[in-house]
Image (tube, rainbow, N blue to C red):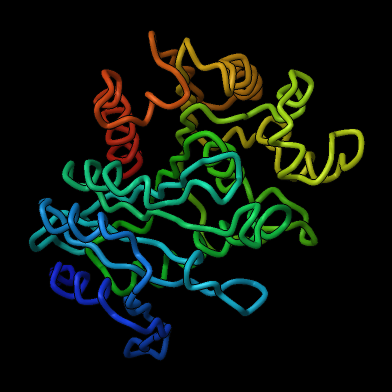
Length: 322
């Protein structure tokens, strides 16, 4: 049975609310169904962008492993194209922002990105998580991302138009690393952070992600050292657990896109990952974007952004028919 996505009116009301209280209803069989959460701290620009676009959206707070969700950071924004949609008909994209795993950049920077994808007929699950400087770092950042993705089925139950059988997880920069890690969490040992996932994406797209973290550190990337709390020599078990190139799953289709002018996360790191994944038998593609740097790859005004949108849209639609 088709179901209309909750309207923009409820979102704008949520954005002006003064309290933030998590809630959850139950389905007829007693299973939990996520309810949208009022978000009083959302950026003012968020309401403006959504109100002027052809999408509906709501915010949800997801539960975390330590039992104390930070309502300013443990949330996801769900975007859907307006209108009625048959159950299971809208492909799902999980979007993970970057920012060197640090608190200066948040998921609000991806509102336009998410809206543009939703305008292409996609459901977009834009994830916020705790970062360095705001309660994150290792292991909390990784536990939060895992918790957010594991919460997706509850949001899907509340919005049955979404195709929950397939999901493309997309990340930029540090989010690219988190996206690749999220796609292979099922390979982790039971005692590792993020192990035993409740929900697994079916493909991954990295946008300028540091997919070979040990090589990145050897090239002088101290952002990774801060995020993981040490160098590969000091905390090798952490790198072994979260470094994408050390956790390749040949059954997981992957795409790594990066700009020729990226001086923050060199193209070599994506190239190394795709070469290793291909050698392992994976369906893996390396896309080198000309005249593109670390920022312009996700700039809605940039010349390559349309290609990025098309690549994600194709991956999401292909996942439904694979």
